[in-house]
Length: 181
Image (cartoon, rainbow, N blue to C red; front, side, top):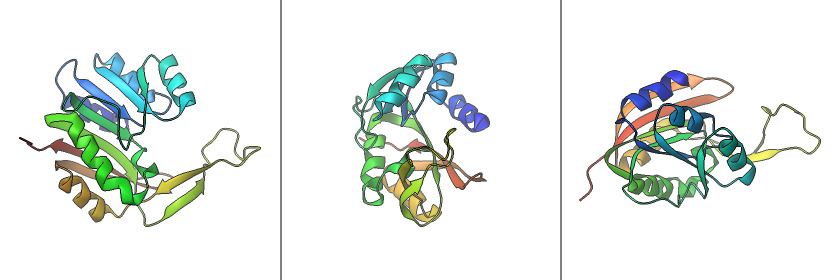
């Protein structure tokens, strides 16, 4: 992921304004801030926002489906393993909302899971797994070609697409916001 993140940063101007959508504990947000970027993390979870702030990031509480951010203000949007929690019927409108945040020519970098299922799944990556109270999270796994079409229809031109096999198959997409008048 470090190389993918570095490639994203290479496409942005110095001191770029970046939104980390679904920032979680702020790992990527901290890297962006350390690199001299003006980055803000968005997450619904108050616990995650506290962790991101402790890691040195600026944060705002909000739903990634409708980020509470200024339109056309951002040079880059980063979303690592967050779109996979958006219900399938809301993915297209979410990506259109993300496009509205970017300046023309701004860069989107996202990573999400591939597959065909949607529903509640156990979170086996927790340190205390199995936890005393089972933790289940909503996951939406996407068909590669369907998702790429939705991204393009939302106003993005694809720059790079790659797959990576870890615990599941991940799709990493880098795209540029196309011109909107």
